[in-house]
Image (cartoon, rainbow, N blue to C red; front, side, top):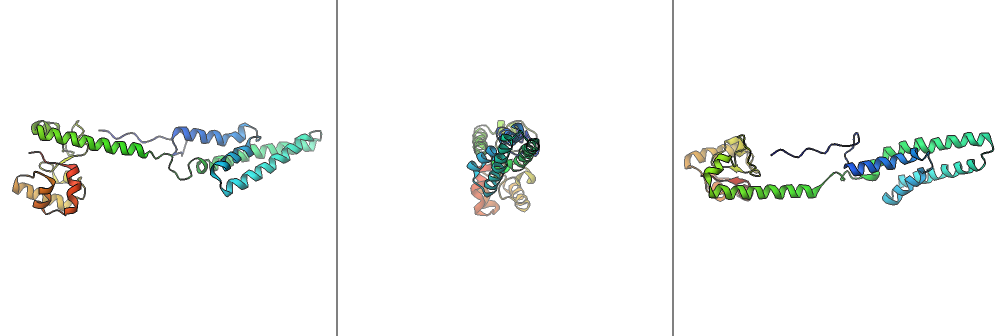
Length: 228
């Protein structure tokens, strides 16, 4: 079964999900789109959300520039005031926008966790567990069909998804190494003992006969299948 395609960022160098990434870009662009008039409010909103010293200082600074801009615009009859007001608008719009883009990831994804979907991972693991259970039931009821479907044979091309099972009685050493805790040395030992005994019936028998560490038995029972 093909693995799900990795998330492709909608924004260059972005690891946030599409919705949050788009929201962060819109937030960061507000200073420029509003010609600077929304800059102090943009940072104030971020301050209310994240409550950081950096955002507090930035909000106070932009609010001060904004207040000065309003005072210049109220005295727009002076050409010098108009020119200075234009400079202040440019600072609020351009500098504010650039500043917002620099910190937008820290505002919208401060811990780098917004792209983590633990629920999806849990569901995927549960599904793989269910696939193993179904494949193991099929192997117990119809070993011939299980062999045709190549259940437990990750070393062979196949279409049936068995959830990651490994057939201890038939898989080669390199496939046995896919089992939890099975090193190359242990895989060779299993293969050798298997040739001598004709195979195994359970994880408990495998551990006892092949002399595997007892701590591996539980994990082996989850991922191993013993097709006769």
